[in-house]
Amino acid sequence: MKRGNPWFTLGADMWTLGLETAQVMGLRSLKIVTGGAEGEGELRRMVEEKVEAGLALQTLALTGGLGFTPQAVAAKTVAHYRRKVRANRRRLIKS
Image (cartoon, rainbow, N blue to C red):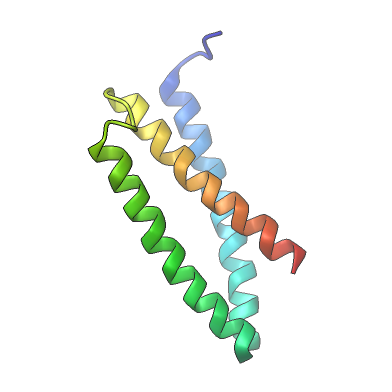
């Protein structure tokens, strides 16, 4: 089933990613500000996750895993990062 204009859908997905990212930034900031081993661990985890996510996306791009049209590449890139951000949000809300 086709879902309307792919660029509009992509825009909505990017907007949602922005909201989720802002939530994660706030939750992470609270954890980091408290300091201690948990804060330091969160800083390390944040950097490691960013590097891993970027390398995974690069691998997808180089192997054709993002598709071959501009819409497909953009949509799969946003979906890739949304999965990572959503997982972090769930983890940080629980802790």
